[in-house]
Length: 390
Image 1 (spheres, rainbow, N blue to C red):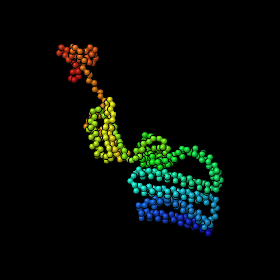
Image 2 (spheres, rainbow, N blue to C red):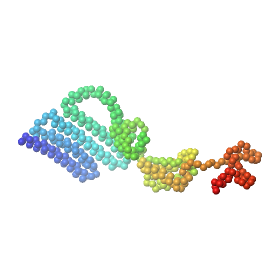
Image 3 (cartoon, helix red, strand yellow):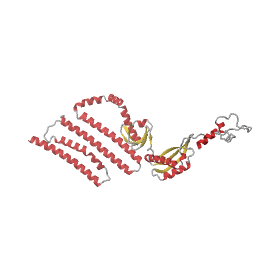
Image 4 (spheres, rainbow, N blue to C red):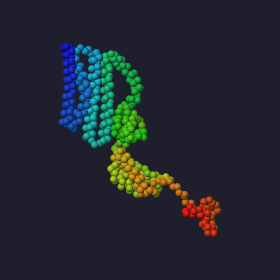
């Protein structure tokens, strides 16, 4: 009975002590958050509770197996599983803690500056560094779990290290694309070419950079679709970054109007309309004729806004307002297709003034027919026209 009760009590007590210790740590972080709410680090570190509890329990079980009287050799399955759990929980705890510290640093930096571009740049850099650290910790933990904790694989590990040069060349060729994206991600993070939150136009799609990983960049398009592209694309292909150098942007609206359009009145109406719009930041505006064709003129209205979202809304409302105003006040200014017959010139007279010049035939000759035939009757064409009017 003692052989069963002692291990149960010792191991159970170790687990209870480990859980209680984790609970006390969480209570301490909660108290620190309540006393200093401006410091977000204790609240963020509370995310470490699950990996911390797993680590404490696994360590407690490994430390308590000798006092419990259980003889567990180091090379048994139970000892190996506990060692793997301890290693994995340590890596998990380090990853979560690094994320909490990085988020706290970003929040503190954002609270000290009003430069949104710098905040987005710092956020992008922290995101990339955090992913690199996470990948390194995961690889190291996996290597420890495989090579160190499984003695049978140590010989294989030594052989692999002996041929590291050949394996490095093979791995470099096989993972060329992955390594290229990795270095491209680091270049983007610290080169400030594109940041999380930037408004970009890529492959004809307009959207906002939502996520930057070690391999891909996710762009949220205006209609909530996601465009995922390799990071290396942004280092090898041209793209538009509307947020670089500031958020201010100028939008344009093109109208195609008749040549008789009142451009000056249209320009004045645009000015008065912009004064009442909150999307217009007041920096600049203009309305000019930029081109002409045989049937229309091209009118360009330009207006500035604080960011790409406002300029899109402003372009839409300006386009709608100008067309509505022209339709209401100057409908003749809208483009139209002329379908009425052209006005034909009259007959040319002979140089001596004796009558129509020789060779005037066709419609010109018909147009010069006398209005009276001498007997008081109208010409046949005129009578037909009179019948139509009657």
